[in-house]
Amino acid sequence: MIKQILGRIPRKPSKSSQNDAYNDGGVNGNGPNSINSSKSTSSASKPSNSGSGASRSNGSLAPLSTKSNQPKKSAQIAAQGGPLLSPGAYDALPSFRDVPSSEKQSLFIKKLNMCCVVFDFNDPSKNLKEKDIKRQTLLELVDYISSVTSKFNEVAMQEITKMVATNLFRTFPSNHENKALETYDQDEEDQMMEPAWSHLQVVYEFLLRFVASPETDAKLAKRYIDQSFVLRLLDLFDSEDQREREYLKTILHRIYGKFMVHRPFIRKAINNIFFWFIFETQKHNGIAEMLEILGSIINGFALPLKEEHKLFLVRALIPLHKPKGVSMYHQQLSYCITQFVEKDAKLSDTVIRGLLKYWPITNSSKEVMFLGELEEVLEATQPSEFQRCMVPLFRQIGNCLSSSHFQVAERALFLWNNDHIRTLITQNRQVILPIIFPALEENTRNHWNQAVRSLTLNVRKIFSDVDQELFDECLATFQEDETKEKETQEKRESTWKRLEDVAASKALNNEAGLVSRFASSIAILTSQKPGTTSGS
Image (tube, rainbow, N blue to C red; front, side):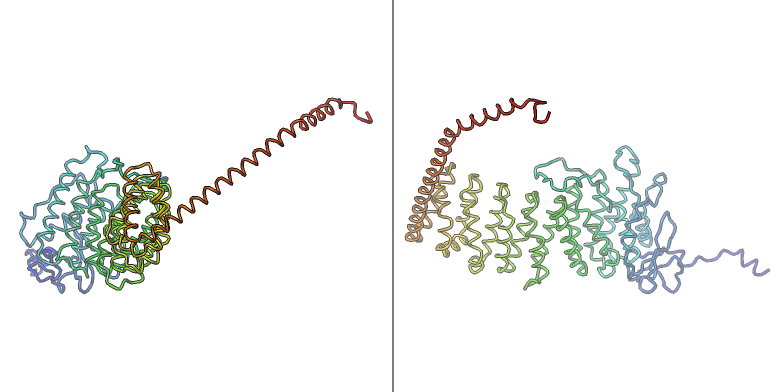
């Protein structure tokens, strides 16, 4: 009887059911709503001991494994691309301003799960209300994550990465697989604009603020922003929307700075993308942005440079001069190359010989770009390294000086406007002037462009003022070679003339013989009629 009476009395709710299972943006569990690990059961989280957490979906708690040694966590999270809420029941949640502080973390998780619904933006007239609700919710999440004053706990990080992965990680249409060897024009304006950008932009901003937040513990977050997450983030660099690539560039740079454990992996992954681009497809939309990140990374390399970094220069950066579409990223590539030379001057010989290896033959605009990069490299080159490569270098510069394309010849002549390069050339004029003197003399006499002729005269004057004796020797040698060339040409023409005369005389002498032999063969054929052969 007493048990029946007591059973009818309403029980006092426990703390685990009164309070939400999540702290107010914290991981330390010291806040007023932190979970008591000794009292929590299936709905409580114990990140420091058990490694298990809880997640809200449609208002109910579902256990999620958050073990730190789980290697494929981000891959599993990214695979959950299906909506967690039915679009038909997609209603706005209360604002963070309308709930007490004790419930903000619970509302934060609910909003994250709500934003895991991915809508179809290919049809602009579809789910307009739901799309607007999601965008407003995402904006609220961005404001909330910027104002959090306590560390994010493990459950919150898991929900954050799940929402980000669901919205961002996707496969691009392979519309350029059949264009492996085609070049792409820098002036091409028909690049695709992502239709879902109104949502994606806010998700990228959310991820950026999460990574940059001082309340994000890198040691804990690396379990969720792991190598799989970073790899899929790198895949997004092939997006045709430049706005998306700009966000990715900033986010990846922040990840590289915050998660030191991922730095070697990020460099290796970018290296592999470059290999695939150079030797396989020659088509990728994000090479310039990746090189921009690398420029900042290279600038922070400690001295002396590691062998790994030098190999990256030789195997990845220098071969990036090979693709036809180098103009799309040449500015960023040139900056990276120059950073290496400024870090270690001994690399200038390697870089210059690499440029000569991939020097364009028929592409004049590409040749002008190479000359510009060459000037930047030479500006950081020491005299000892310059002497090691000056012979093949100025053979190529001599070819550029005598180019019929005036921009190539003009850009090569502009090298003498650089004080450091002019000093290097003057110091080694005994070797350089004999190599380029024929090109200078030919330009002075025969080049069709007046500006090229004027610049050539200025360069000749520099050499003559510095060493008139050497200049006269080169001029005498050139004139002597020119005389020999004329004699050789005259002998060649005389030989051909004699051969032509001999051929003409033989043709006249053999004409009668050829006619007689032809008449004889006709007579023999007509005399042999069918059926008159011997033995018939």
